[in-house]
Image (cartoon, rainbow, N blue to C red; front, side, top):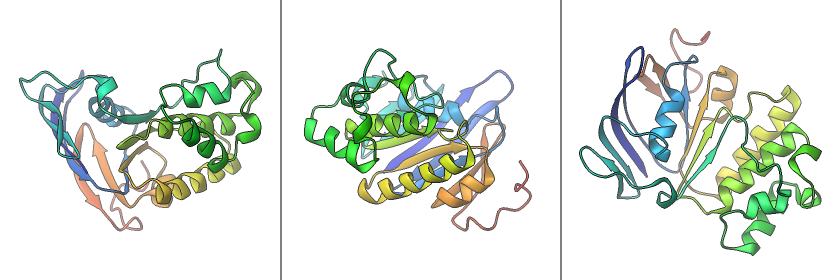
Length: 219
């Protein structure tokens, strides 16, 4: 379970976010520059709130006026928009980087359908394949939480649909909270168990009914 209540001053507004996430896909949905990625970075420890509290599985990651838990001790998987693969490492070595269980690495290669790419380098594979490698790498450390920052935005529609199905399948295998950032409404409806609208750093509305979202279907 993830629980957070944070405030952080940004150039054009104050980020003020509060929500919880269980073993579900929670989508942070809103326009560019609304604070979505900052929320993820605060959870991951790449930046810190000005005040508030972030708790994961009853462990405190951040608390006002206390030293925050370092990134490497948070056990959080983070899939960036550009995938951030190591260009000098093979697919296998990218996935196994930071992992402690070779059997899990091999299992992930099979689960996401890229076993045949194990000896390839990032420059030798497609965008959709890179996305699968990055997702497998994020899961290889057996994280307690998975953060996804618009990981499908640069893919063509057919590849995007395939990756959506992959994520939904993995969600059933790995019962952990998943926080997905997107400004694609159709993607949000397809993947979310719950959608949180974020506007100018605030989350004024949320719903479990992904077919109903007043006034915000054209962001």
